[in-house]
Amino acid sequence: MYRIYSDYLKTKYGEKVYKLPVNLSISCPNRSHGKGGCTFCADVGTGFEAMSSQISVAEQLEKTKDKIAARYKAQKFIAYFQNYTNTYMSLERFQSYILEAANVSDIVEISISTRPDCIKKEYLDFLSEVRKKYQIEINFELGLQTVNYHTLKKINRGHGLGEFIQSVRWIQEYGFTICTHMILNLPGDTMEDAVEGAKFLSALEIDIVKLHSLYLPKNSRLYTEYRNGTITLCSKEEYLERLCEFLAYLSPDIIVERLFSRVPKEYAGFSNWGTSWWKLRDEFEQLMKEKHYIQGCKFHYLNGAALDEELLE
Image 1 (spheres, rainbow, N blue to C red):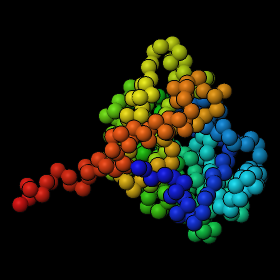
Image 2 (cartoon, rainbow, N blue to C red):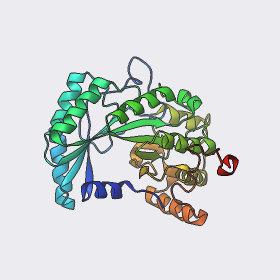
Image 3 (spheres, rainbow, N blue to C red):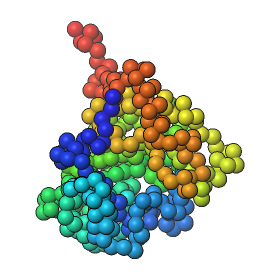
Image 4 (cartoon, helix red, strand yellow):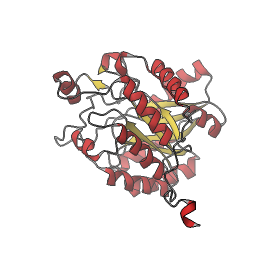
């Protein structure tokens, strides 16, 4: 029906692989200098399951690894620099954190969550050396959220599509994999934006997509707007329809890491229409079956698709 991330990792590494979240004492350029940050973001960022940023990278990884290894008999792990913007620091500081992770045993991949306007070639050069020396794969998680540049401005994202395209081109030059974060139900976005998002990522040959149903942290500006009635959110049924169409237009080569947000209830003023993510997944998969959809079933718009063979006879 669609390409599942856990299956992709198992095929790539020969066994189940687990992500170990790392939390650094950092921020992001969109929160500093009085810019206010994205309107959907809270002070805690997204590192709900991570340890304190005051604990060293190696200790965070070792402690989490020991817990998961004991519970699941896991032997391979991904060091996931998750919270905020993990290239928004000096090159020297970045290098020290990455090398700390690379020297932890059983780490097969380093995943770096960042923004498309925080990519520089000096950082990529360094990561290329790390991959070669430690035989560790490098993955970038880039937050885009939507291809609607009007919405990007409304949510105070702080970058546009141009920055995203350039960062993708640069990262791909080094052969690192790219996971793109998308939100299909931002206020003001429509089904057309969801479909265009799938086309955009497919044309750029992104490796992985991580989809989030919009959740509103209680202390976020977007939640205040939601409570005041100045914005509306689409229904659960509409989101599921958008999700189906997104995957129908998405290249069948792209891996799907996530379909819905997963956030502790105590942090969210609104999340998943009051439904658990796994129930939403079941409803989504049932809808895909009813539509007779599989990922990429509408992937026929690239490679000069308008040049119909009949016109060339």
